[in-house]
Length: 270
Image 1 (tube, one colour):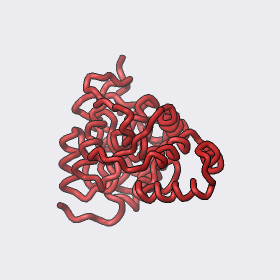
Image 2: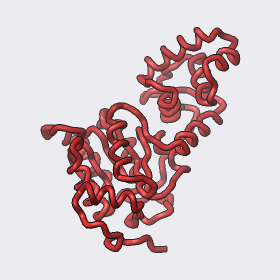
Image 3: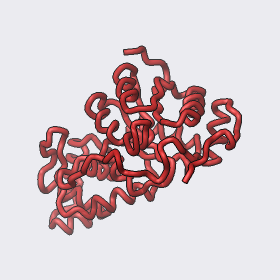
Image 4: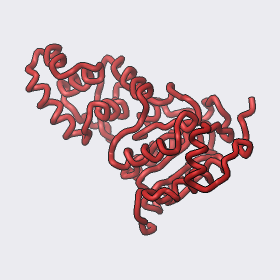
């Protein structure tokens, strides 16, 4: 394994050569980051996280392997390099895939067409600090999906139940947006008891906030039969065609020293 340099070690994976070149240069110029590797395929990502000390992996939802291949890589990273914290990159609004991203093991989701390079940098820093990343609409989508479940079993990678039935009931009510007093009333318990339940749940799962708790539960809920993302499922944009926002280009180009010109990028066809 290669020696880790100072700063947050980042891997950037995208099938688009221009996007990959521009952002790896911009990230490299950032004082707090070190680009450990770049990749275009799932295999290259897996080789990189095992041969280099990667802290945060920025992975396009679609890699050169095909539509939504980034999701499969996330699951594999969770097995072979669980210390790596991953972010799924979308190039257009993909709210319907946000829940799938967190279930696959992502710690954050980021839309390049609707954000700036400064926001991407902040995303990397927060993910590295152990937080999760997503805008209000994306997090709401996850919480709404979870709150609609009639039963929730939080399990580890071996399928072993991590929480008691009562703790799972508390988690479910947290996902519905209830506060401690409301949860206590619903379960006919004292508010102090609910606080104790949450303390032990947080400790068991290694989370520090209610949002992280819900995301953790979504990613491991046994009651949700999450099918593997099919390689033939079509995205809204072809794998090699990516549209990045003007603000993002401006910020990244200033960081990398590249010329700011939208004419250099290929526009989506069809």
